[in-house]
Length: 250
Length: 319
Image 1 (cartoon, rainbow over the protein chains, first blue to last red):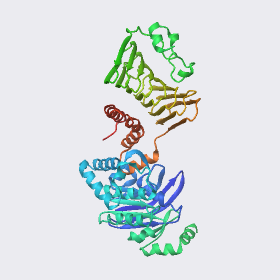
Image 2 (image 1 turned 90 degrees about the vertical axis):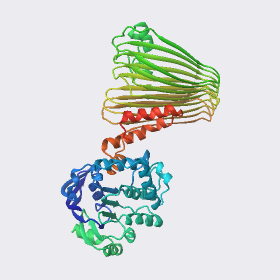
Image 3 (image 1 turned 60 degrees about the vertical axis):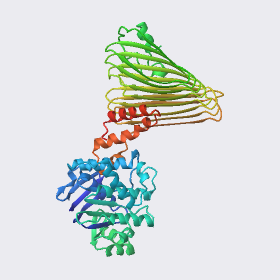
Image 4 (image 1 turned 90 degrees about the horizontal axis):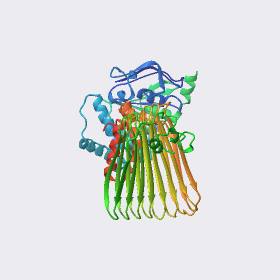
């Protein structure tokens, strides 16, 4: 489903990703863990097509289609969703208005009919309730005045409504207390499906206690330096990243 | 010295120039080389009797290559209410000045909405002198797409004494258009309130000007005055000039002003595109959110709906 080969990405002409290769088949959840500065967020932004993240070599395909040739909104319409580490506040645009505009833009790009207003509201109510989001909050400016935890829940809520093919969760656990972490993890687990791939980017193992990944990869100095099963996350938690930092520096 | 005097006398020397401090960003003398033969002055008087409520629409249409001066006198009686809509439509190469003298009686209300829809080749000036009685309410919103040169000026004499003023404006400028929103509010008595929010978006080589002055005269204690001007500049060659001024000569006064000029939030733009919204639609959505606040503050429901539609149409918002 998602296939990343030899990906090199530079930011401000500084190389960050240095030959990253990663395959995530449909139906699987992969975790990428790594120390600060390893290039975790760069990976998520490069996949989403953020301006300023320049791909200098390598390929990324989703279901065989070249993602790198597409605009960010075209990638979204193909099913790429990024849960932001720091979700943006958009004053003056109510969350529901924003999300309905996004959903219908994706439908339009895929040649599908619009979701009617009543159908959209029904969908939004159901998904919000599952994530314990107060529906009135969705009538306020997107993320404006929300706490860190509320913003993360809003990201998962948007993911649930947009129902992407590939979900990238960038440090979704940061800023979450124990209860919010559980709610968010349940929301993510509810979306596991045979035709969806998920990439969970995290520094800590604790989110992976709630969302059990099929594979865990270690990202250090811009490339994947180790891969394994869920047990690798526990080993990292116990031993830290020092070993990999030394290896990649050697 | 004014455009009106120049039109009436045929004397170019009567035009305000950049040497006049108050007109330095909206020079007319350097711009206008020929004064066309003027049409007869349009004069109107409108009286709203005490306790009455009226809605009045005034349209000022200037003919191509014409020159027109209009003088409007409006008296709003005690506890009366006027919902006034003005629309300016200056054709190409027209010169026009509209002068309004408005007296708002004790406890009366004026809702004034101005839509300036001039041609890009028009020169247009509107000057309103508004005198408020004690306890009067003025709620004004000026919406403009600019002109070759355009000035929308409002001067309010504010008696305090429970009178309150909202003096908002919105400019959306493209091409080589120019718009100047100038306001002066003079508080002369205690317990007056003024609240002002001006927002603008300029692109291409357009130029937006905001000059806002709030004077709190000696004795106008306990005045509460707030002024905000916020603009987005969407191109390197567009320009915004702002001069917010608070002159305070009284005690126990709350006065605040904020002035920001910046670009569209790139973070928000990427966020919206990541969710699937195409670039152009995302920009329109963010701009509408930015300027929509001004339309949302309009108290009269009909005028508010019209202002929202005006904004959406100008920004090409998808709904």
